[in-house]
Image (cartoon, rainbow over all chains, first blue to last red; front, side):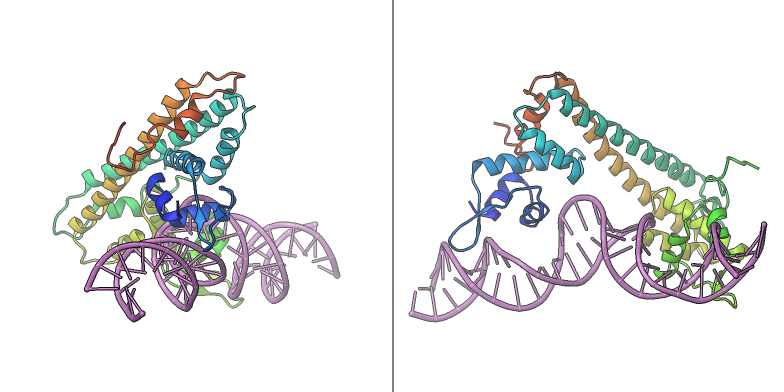
Length: 140
Length: 140
DNA sequence: TGTAAACCTTATAGTAGCTATAAGGTCAAG
DNA sequence: CTTGACCTTATAGCTACTATAAGGTTTACA
C-alpha cells in the first residue's frame, strides 16, 4: 500500500502523512525497492487514530501524548480521561470567546442602518466604544 | 507619544504595532529626531479601531477593508453591514465546528471508566469508530 | 514500443498573526 | 556616570500544514 492509497483510506492528505513522519508523530515508514513508502494495516489504524484526534481538536503535541497512551499497554484509562477532559475545557473556552465575538457582531449589525448613508454605527462603535477594555473597566 | 505609550493606551503590544506598520495595515509613523516613532491622538483612534476589529474576529485582511471604510467619508453603511454580516457567518460556522468537538469529547469522557485499567473506551473510540467519516457514510 | 498520466521522491517556501531574540542606540534618574 | 528602561532593525520561531519545484517510477493504452 503506497502513501496515496493509505491517504485515501485514512482521510489524511499525503502531504500531512509525510509531515507527521517528518516531525516524528509517525514512525518512519518502510520503503519498497523503488524508495516509495509502504504501509500496512497497523499503519492504517495509527493514521485513523491521528485523524480522529486532530478532528476533535487535539494539537499535534497532544496527539503525541495520545499516541503514547495508545501504544502503551500499561496505560491507565484515568490518564487518557484527564487528557480529554483538559481538551474539553480548552474547547469550551474557545467556544466562549467565539460566542462573545458573535454577540458583539450581532449588536453591531443591528445598530447599523444598512443603507446608502456614510454614517455608520458599526464604524463608530469599533472606533470608540469599549476603547479601554484592556484597562481596569474605567467605563467613563 | 512613543510606541510604548501608545501600546499601553491602545491595548496592543509594541511588536504588534510595528508589525501592522510593516505590513501596511498602518501608515508609517512619523519619526522624532532620535528615530523613534511618534504618535498622536489620531493614531490612538486608529489603533483602538484595529484592536477592536481583531478582537471580534476580523482577520488582518478584513481589518484592511474595515480601515478603508473607516477612512472613507463616502462609504455606505450597507457595505460595512455586509462585511460584518459575513464575519458573523464565519464565526458561527467556527462555533458549530467547536460544538461538534465538544460533543465528541463529552461522549468520550462519559464512556471512559477513568480508573487504573489499561482498557480505555476513549482510545478504542479514537482508533476505530467513525473510521470512515470521510467516506460516503459507509457505516458498516 | 512509446508516451502520457498518475503516481512517488525530496527540499524549500509560503500561509496567519504575531512573539521572541539578538545586537545595538537613546534617554532619564540618581 | 552608570543603570535601567526605553527605542531601533533584522531575523527566527511558532502551528499545522499546503503549495511548489524539479525530478524519478509505474501503469495504461495505442
